Image (cartoon, rainbow, N blue to C red; front, side, top):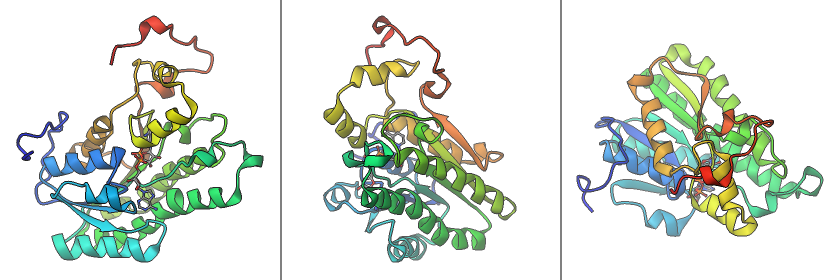
Length: 272
Ligand SMILES: NC(=O)c1ccc[n+]([C@@H]2O[C@H](COP(=O)([O-])OP(=O)(O)OC[C@H]3O[C@@H](n4cnc5c(N)ncnc54)[C@H](O)[C@@H]3O)[C@@H](O)[C@H]2O)c1
């Protein structure tokens, strides 16, 4: 499918001449973010660990095979973006894991599972940002967006690792956003509600509860990856030039739904 024929999901931003690096861009939300940036004219680099998925990326996305928890791989991806396209305007820290063995109360969580999630979901964001920031400082401009989660702001059972680490992704954005505010670098986190991706489908296949999960969102459905991509494009554009060091929830109202609220009856489910 050519670029002009491809549905853009309503994305209207012009990113011609901008260079974007997306971690975990071979699947799910990251893939939709890569596609949206490609459709708006950007040069896009995807750093991903999963070879079969990375092979399936569009020819317009330059793929770097590597692991965000390894500093040398992060260095290689940033160096590739700079050498190939001449700079780095937007970094999207998106690669994260939530293995089924992590759905445990804390005392049953294997320490090695915790450690791998820290390495990828937390340290990986830091390592990639650490490589990108010197490039952005030299340019005097840049935007970094960390994919956090609604679970980074409120609690649930059985997410003893994922929840606290996703909270840390928000704090990374606040910390870096303040640190580099006078250097032309904006840093934000985006916290999705449940989004229809392989990560969520695997959890639902394991645990069930798809309809219940949809109904927990006031909009009556889970989100689409393209809806997160739209928010990321907006936040990385000059339209969001006064927004930094904060978190944006893109969650169909999930975060506003109080613990004391009555659940919606099934009849309010939209047929999406
Ligand atoms: N899907 C949701 O409902 C949801 C909700 C809230 C937040 N999020 C967040 O959005 C982001 C994307 O989630 P998704 O659902 O699209 O996930 P996904 O599993 O569909 O995709 C994740 C991608 O990251 C890659 N990856 C994993 N480990 C890596 C590593 N060490 N180095 C490089 N690449 C690696 C995978 O190969 C895959 O391509 C994550 O940060 C996740 O926490 C997702």
